Image 1 (tube, rainbow over the protein chains, first blue to last red):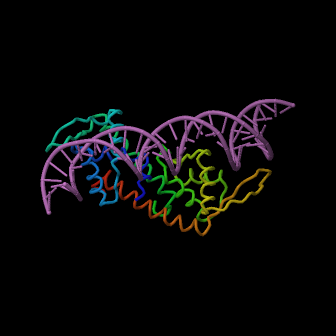
Image 2: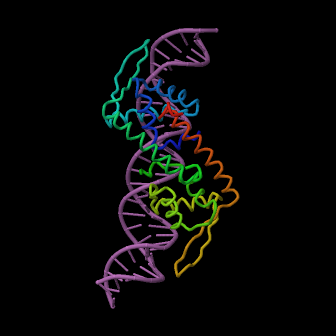
Image 3: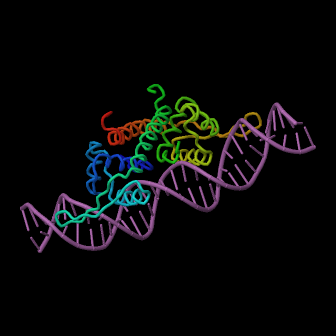
Length: 108
Length: 108
DNA sequence: CTCTACATATAGAGAGCCTACATGTAGGAT
DNA sequence: ATCCTACATGTAGGCTCTCTATATGTAGAG
């Protein structure tokens, strides 16, 4: 899949994957790939900066930990982030409805 | 709607709106707005350059005409453009399925 | 000792959408 | 006469976000 098309929806994906449990970057990438049945192969150069951006925005809180000798930065959703996720979900529904109504008029 | 999120899907919209009839830029903007129930308010600064890009790519053919004293550039879909539209449609379905499977797991 | 998986990070490039501005005609209202 | 709105196209520059490529380092298997 052309992940360039993700433009603007990456935030929603990251927040969503962190909805029920905190995860670190590497695990987030794996979770995205797994949940999408292999369709979403998001490069590290996309995810790590995006996570920092979301942290700066106050949607995520990151914390360093060392597991098995390796350092991880685990992110969890903040209350603000949870609100943002709800907003992203409804924005996504609006978005697909709008594009869908143009792309496939008869199925809408 | 945040039309910034359109990133990468504009081509699909433009090709789709031209599928059954040639239209000029201004009419395309109106058609997008109408078909989407007002959700897609795409600025001229987005549409006109995009149309030229699609023409350069060989997907559209443009032609000048004068109607009621006003000049219009009417675009029609080329055979290549029609093929591209089919590709855009299946890409769109893949895209929404992938994002949807992450954003709303239980509905997938 | 090497290779793979795990794990994070940054710089720079590229794409594409937006805002703002520029230009011009036609027709109705004041 | 003049102004305003709708019609109609176009460009420049900015901005955001994703990608590629690269760098760094640990752990464990072979």
